[in-house]
Length: 472
Image 1 (cartoon, rainbow, N blue to C red):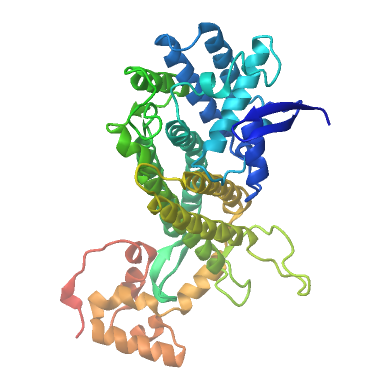
Image 2: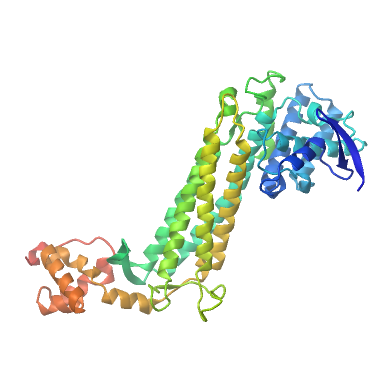
């Protein structure tokens, strides 16, 4: 393999000649083999790193702190990377020691070598344009990395929100489709009162839609960044106007309303916005898992369970039991949710582990946030396309269970009294007779009254009560 020799604080190292990264990236690759997940696995992070470096170059040029020719080459290199070029050169494992320095240097070195090519020089000829002196000018890992992370999370949130909206729309459509399917509602796994299958699916849609706004609100908090604070937030090695200029450029480049943090020292060590965002992902995952649990229950059987809905069959369910088809899509969503919940705990612990002016555990925070978003987006798309859209109602089964249930007695309580209703319910439970049969047999209500009170129109929404005919 052809190589080139590069030098850093620790000495010399051979680097693959065709690699766009340099010696510090290679050391990180050798040191950190934790997850097998490289920076390139999350394209939004690569794009965000490039945009931060571009904004810094523009601000430095405005202030006369960077040679215009170097600046043009750096900006052009960043634009190419932002647009998807050389993402495969971002090779460092997401989890790393050094508070993200290896990620920052991976970006600095790739941008530097691409800029060198544009200036007519070879890779590694850093005497003409240097990863630290030029690409990293007026920056530290401690402000460039978290600023890029804040932007990356917002970039990744956009497609996630779109995916959630699509899933919500699919659930709402099922709510409309099943609006006339009357069934028994259940509490604590016991018969409760009647409802429609449409109401059940509409509720699924509403509970997930709530978190669309919550994610948007959390993204607003991530617009406040510490770029310009450098090492600990004091702004050492920067021009007094640099922070405001750099953040302004980043807002223009990214299309996101980025603003400088009010206190850069505080912002450099604070992980609060990341913790909040992670908590919203956890909340959404919990809701998504609960819905998946319900889908599994409602489709259970097909003959000895609830069997009120039919999930689209995706694959044979057993290597030994012929004909068995499992609810594999909701099961996979459940597992995704459990991982997101675990990721949130990791974020919480990492955020708590900050010490003094920096949190060295930021790489774990960023890895888990981006991983959770990627997993949730995939899970939502899978659930919508391979499950929700194809769900069918078993109308006969819903009607059968409704007819056999004693839960409809609740609708009669205002008219025959709680004591009578309790007695009728107990007799029905022990005898196998229906509530309708027993109420008519005892003459507690006329057939016409019973028909009206047990009709879907009466049982599925609030109704005025006439107490004049109420029995004792």
